[in-house]
Amino acid sequence: MMLIDSHAHLEMPDFKKDLEVVIQRAKESGVEYIFTVGTEKKDWRRALEIANSHPTIYAILGVHPHNAKEIDDQTYPMLRELCRDKKVRALGEMGLDFFRNLSPRDTQLKRFREQIGVARELVLPIVVHDREAHRETLEILKSENAEECGGIIHCFSGDYEMAKICMDMGFYISIPGSITFKNAESFREIVKRIPLESLLVETDAPFLTPEPFRGKRNESGYVRYTAQRLAEIKKVSFEKVAEVTTENALRVYRLKV
Image (tube, rainbow, N blue to C red; front, side):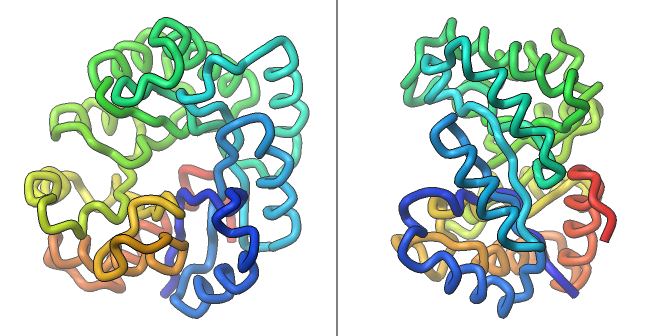
């Protein structure tokens, strides 16, 4: 039995002092692979450095919608260059965040479309960030033929109808620690309807720490608690959840182990 943390941010300053300890704790919790996500240009090399220093860690590189306004003439050439490294398994996280609106909405829309194009060119799956922008996210995924890339809807926050559309396009639905929150009953009802064969588990560390550690820094080892809650919701064994979500992650990231 092994688990995969399909989405974390080990390159963030939160892990600067104890990264190796965090990675070791994850291994002791049964987490065999971690995918660390560099969300802006200044973090890409660090994410790739971590991946290349650890055989069971891989990188995902892209521009978060918060940073969409920072894309310049050097961004995509640098992204293309770094993505030649075999440790890079996807492009992202890209998408739309109309909750915080840290980049203008028109800019987010434009850059989301562009990054899907880059992913198609590089033959990489995409990792999609969608917050308070469900309709627009689906419109872009459809109009840009994102099913040609495939990928993951990270930290899913839509309804079942959105999940169904995404699954029909070949996307996986990734479940974070928020599924353990006491006030997340409606989210759990949605997840109950999504086939296990379409689900991944993630931490989004250092964010979205699951119960019983809510309020503290999240880390990859805690993906175990998300998987345990998912097993309860699905009324299957923890081992089954670990097996299927691991197979799903290996498939979407095109890894043979």
